[in-house]
Structures are given as structure tokens and as C-alpha cells.
Length: 404
Ligand code: ATP
Ligand code: MG
Image (cartoon, rainbow, N blue to C red):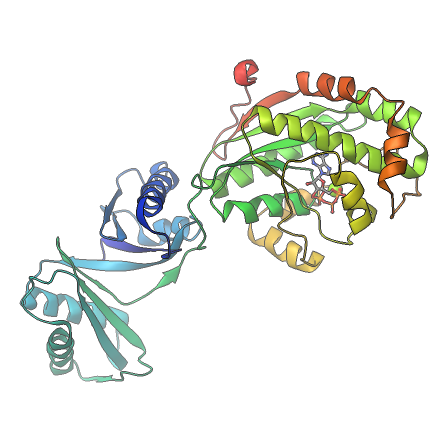
């Protein structure tokens, strides 16, 4: 007998009907994708509100490490599978208990659930039969129904019975790919990768857009953003397309035409227009950024209000109410922090004067923008945007000219 299965429980149990079955199918697909390279022989099946992974000899710890990162998983447990037969269930229960308490000391409780109602032993009866059998066949194990050291959970299902003793937790949320597509504005900083990660939790598919200003920002700065994209793609369990916008020309024009204290505001307004266009061309329905209220001059409410004015597309700001320290903690957990703190120039800081207006207003911004041929600047940058397709395992890094 051995733990050759993992039983997976879903998050968001409130979903109903068609949504629910799409959710389950997508989660199955995502789990398969996440496991297939390192664990090619595992089987992933669904049955009546649960998913079952058959390990086929693969390492349970390795598979568990992967499952801990798959969105849409509430919890999972290594499971013993037996036939729907009282004697077999008793033997498996005893095995599970001895495995969980090798020195046979401690307390336990049995929680049986009879999902297959044709099984003749009712849940309460099964709790009793199994509990008694374990007590009879061990020395110092006792029952504690309130705070047991080990809870032996038994699910008698249509196809088989599963026994579990240990529960681990997934990240919750919705399976990636069930929530439509967003376009992440990805800088090389700490915040925007975390913002992307937070959105994955709600099931979205994601592409990213990055503004690059060669020669002021160099190849290494771009490589850093590609590397961050790869880390995000690992969390998504899917490739991510990174749109790299050449921003130098636009920045030069803004720098020449706009008074210093409004330069940052206008630059952000232009970035937003470009990002919106790239998003709609790729059928993304919202932008995501890493702004946090009050963190820097461009993230005051006045700034957000004046910058946001130029677009209608929803802008999702998952970090808006978070402190920097909270963001850093997530960045460390998701392996983006070390990359983010590498010191390379970001396009937003070049050209900028030390004085930036923290309370820019809409009328002035519009007036300072008027001499610029905004539409031409935006269209030119969008046309020259290059697309890189990145995944955690390899960098395909091809150009996809037919994407638009
Ligand atoms: P981050 O750590 O994400 O860079 P930040 O606190 O440094 O954020 P800003 O540099 O003001 O703040 O940027 C605010 C947001 O604007 C970023 O979180 C990101 O979403 C977007 N952004 C900034 N620079 C770029 C860029 N070069 N390309 C794409 N998006 C950008
Ligand atoms: Mg930044």
C-alpha cells in the first residue's frame, strides 16, 4: 500500500452551472500543463467536484510543490485509494494512521463521507467501525473528536474510496485562463511584477507591455524585464507575450515641448494611450499597473486623475492600497524581488527634471500636450512595437509580426 494519489479540492466553490464546469476543466488543463515537463507519467482526472492525481511512482513532494502554486486549488491531500469494501478500508485506515504516527502515540478522529450512497455502511457507522479497528490494532493511539493530532478523512466515492490524513493549501483564486485577458504594464521595478501576480490569482490571461528607451535604457535592462516575464509565466503556467514599445522618440518630443514639471505627467499620458492601443489590438480588456496610492509623485490622486483622463479602458491597480513592505514580501515569495532590485535604468526616470508636479491638473496637461502630435507619436510607437514570446522553460523570443 502506498500514497499513490493526490486528492485536490477546488477554491471558489460558490461558482455554479456552466461556469463551474469550465472552471474545473480549465484547472485540470492547467495542472496537467504545470506537471507535464517534470512529471510526465502523472494522470490528472476529475470526478464529481474533485480532482485526482495519480502519481504513478513520481515523487509526492515534487508534485505538491507544483500544486501549491496553481491558482484555483484550495487544498490537496496525499491519498490512499482502495476499493469500496469495508475490510479494505479498515486496512488502509490502519496503514494511514501508522504512517502518520510512526511511534503510535497521539490522538485521532475519523471523518467519513459516503458520496456513493449505494455503499451499505453509513458515514457514522464507518467512523465507528474504522475507529474501533484502529484502536484495537495499535497501542497508544486514542480518540479525540475535538482536537485530534490526526484527522483521518475517508471519502467513499463512486469509483473508489480515498483516505487522507494531511491537508496542504494551494493559492486559492480562479484558474488562469477563466477570466479574460489583461495587459500588464511591466517595468523593471518591484511593484508591477507583483501586480501581475496578484491578477493571475483572479484567473486572467496576461500579456505584458514594456516601454524601452534605447540607448538610454540598455539591453540588460530589457533582459531584466524579459526575465521577470519568464518568472511570471512560471506562475501562470503559460507563455506570456511581452510587447516592447520603443519609447525614445516619444520621450524626446515630450522633453522638447513640455515644461519640466509636467513632463512626467505627459509622458504617463502618452504611455497610457500606447498601452491602451496595444491592449485592444490584442483583445485585452483592461490594463494592470503597479501603482500604489501616494507612493511617488505620479501616484497621488491628482496625478492618477490627470493621467487616467486620456483613456477609457479599465485600469486595474491591485496594489493601490498596499504598503511597500507588503509588496516586497510578495515579491520575495514569488521570486521577482532579486531580479527587480538589479540596478538598471528605467525609461521613466531619464530626462526627468528633479521637480515633478504632485498635483498636476487636467487643463494644464491638455494645454501642454496640444503642440505635440499625440496621435502620430502613439501610432508610430505602436507600429514599431516588437513582440517576444516568453516562457519559464525557454525563451522563444521570436518576432510575431502577424500578431496585430
Ligand atoms: P514599479 O516598481 O512597478 O516600477 P514604481 O513604484 O517604480 O513601480 P513607477 O515607476 O512610477 O512606480 O511606475 C508606476 C507603474 O507604471 C508601474 O508599476 C508600471 O505598471 C508602469 N510602468 C512604469 N514604467 C514602465 C515601463 N518602462 N514600461 C511599462 N510600464 C511601466
Ligand atoms: Mg518604476
